Length: 211
Ligand SMILES: [Zn+2]
Image (tube, rainbow, N blue to C red):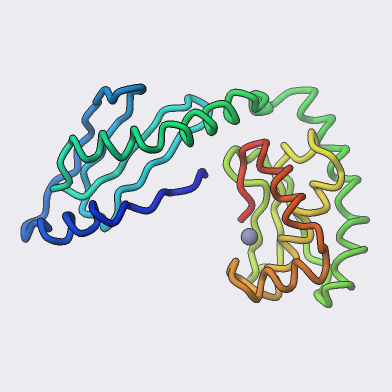
């Protein structure tokens, strides 16, 4: 998932002032801005949100019903640089792994690589070693099911540096202590892996998000 942009103040004010009393159906409208095509979906949301979808690079905007088209166009135009940057990033991503011998080989490699990392990091974080699952995931590097004490890691990690796999393992283990991504979570990460922000940046050059 890519970042969601906050609505500029002038749009937020207008959206509040013009908020409709009756529900408005959502619809998509293809528009051509000054530099790029984008799809607008009208929804009863508070903010204008802009996302660049992978792998297509398609730009999608979700906007409250009464923000005028021209203001959305101006908003998109103001984010043109950001959009181009993210489209470049998406274009550099390798195609997702499809099932087959290569995926099977990578899965075996990853299945061997993960247990030593869990054995190293679970005691350091003071959590029991969790079960793990490897799955083909296209939007997440990893997830943590706190209740079941199970972490799930993306097969895509097999194609990345072991330091980045380690970062995701530590991130998911940290969720066994702290569910959210707030200051408490960051403090755990900083204590365990002081360079985690750099690792996250390197990892996200590849597009997926941790969870
Ligand atoms: Zn997370």
